[in-house]
Image (tube, rainbow, N blue to C red; front, side, top):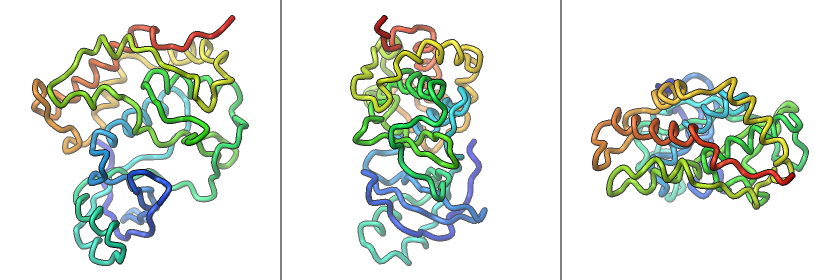
Length: 254
């Protein structure tokens, strides 16, 4: 599982985030962007963050280190903002911590890693059905001259349909991905080379290892998958089914 680190201080909210993430300090002396389990989007967004970040790391993209942040109810007592205080109280327990990258700045149109990195980002977003990497919200940072991918919660849409039970992995496997609004859309020609590179770095054996990083308490039971391990197995089945096809890869015009 992700390493667990207690939160020692809530520093400030990041108002630009829809789920009101916040900057916190932790017992390991690290500073993290905390994504709260009590936010309106729920814990499945945290699962997507972990799964897609680890996929990114394994295929060769840079993404901030993740931890599970243990939030004590006492932290809320020292927060004057009532909205933040309510969020902290609703998020007691394990939350997601994303390593804070001091001095990083937003993507401005240049890809530091060139076509290789652009192709890998497009491949990752196509595979995970990410709908949130447009010019309105690139979710890319440049830090020390390198490109970093962040904010993957809008990926893996299939788990939002599990309220009535596990759905069919074959539907996700065959679902096409639309790159028309993607911030790196002009680099689509780099996707075939990225696909070849990924084949040397990622395989079906990786998916169970990736899901083992997710804390049990974020894996909410659903009909047909009542235990954390059963929910993990469902994620693995969906990822495995999609990885076995290439129906989702964007078509590159010749």
